[in-house]
Amino acid sequence: MNNQKKDTLIIYNSIYGTSQIYAKYISEEFCSDVLEYNKNISLDEISSYNKIIFISALYAGKLSNIKSFKKYLIK
Image (cartoon, rainbow, N blue to C red; front, side):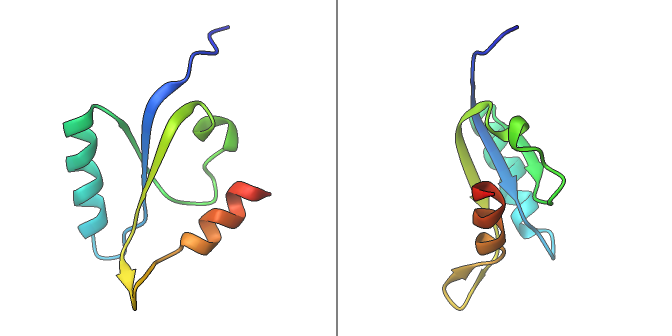
C-alpha cells in the first residue's frame, strides 16, 4: 500500500460558476487535483494531500460555506 501523500487538492464551492473557473485554472497551473465541495467527499480522500486549497465566493467579507467545511473536517 502506498502511503505517499499527494501535493495539493483544490476544493471549490460555486453557485454561479466563477469559483469553479478559478479552481480549474489554478489546478492546471499547479498540476493539482480539483473537487467540488459537497458533504460526500471522504475524509480519507482529502487526508491524502499535503495541502488543501478552498475556493468559494466572498460575501460580506466571508467565504461562503467555510463554516460547514471546517465542521466537516473536525468531525
